[in-house]
Length: 103
Image 1 (tube, rainbow, N blue to C red):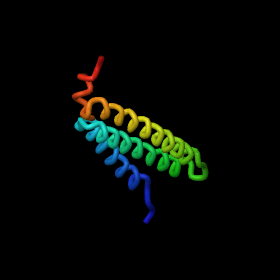
Image 2 (spheres, one colour):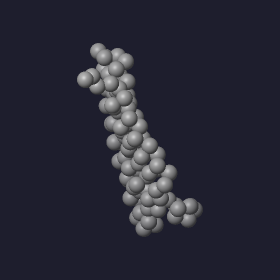
Image 3 (cartoon, one colour):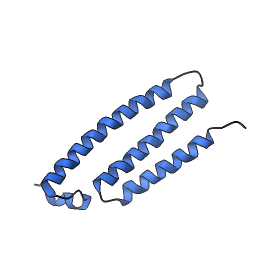
């Protein structure tokens, strides 16, 4: 039995949909960040799958995925630093309370 692209694309679609749902419904900034990372990981899986099945001998999709993972790690570090600073000022990381912190 040969494994086709659909076996990889369906779990990536489920991951992306869970990330979108979490991003829309959550009010905690950490949960929103985790949902965003889940969506980015689903996109990375798609890059690798499309590279593997469309261009079997080349590595562009996998290299692009490595760069995307590095950028996501930097983005996560920056977002956590911002969340920590917001928590130090307001003692809450709820998105609804951020409008109260405007000057």
